[in-house]
Length: 236
Image 1 (cartoon, one colour):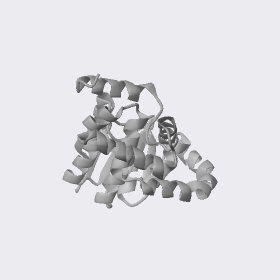
Image 2 (cartoon, one colour):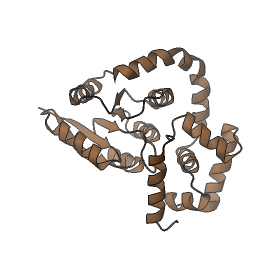
Image 3 (cartoon, one colour):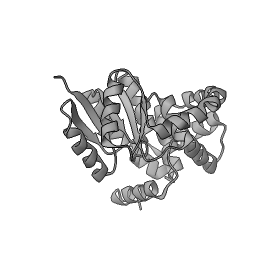
């Protein structure tokens, strides 16, 4: 029997280990890789070409939705299944627009997670009941606003999306340049392009846009991780 290969993308080690243990009980499922940040999951996906990526949204370096876009661009046959603690309308809407085929909440039972993996591999979609209710409520909203949102997102390059995330998470140009391995002048050019394309002309506005569009989540956990990563790199 050919197993369904799965790549786990989750920055919390204990959660990732729990998911892997749960999947290991299933004869037809196999975890073939694990990633703890957005850039790592892209690199691993391109290397091992899994059938399904089980993706968290809020991850360091690059959020799960932008990672999803980049993976699907390189590997359109791969199925992306979101497993998140958050079910806000913005997250659900942006996940669907990113190309995911399923969205589960982290309180979902093990049986449903495994069922969802099998369903999306077989060409179906799978959404937790709570997410399905969000979809019903969002349907008319999506019809009205999807074109405008897509037009703005489509204007941004993958690098500009990365810079937007760093700006919204409070990084100065120096820290962003160090994280991305580019010059400060290049970061400044990306920042200028973001402001022009989005018609937003201050950092606070870019941050609000990033939060409302689901590029980042507005919680203390992510910012504490960013602070620790800067300290590890000697940026504080």
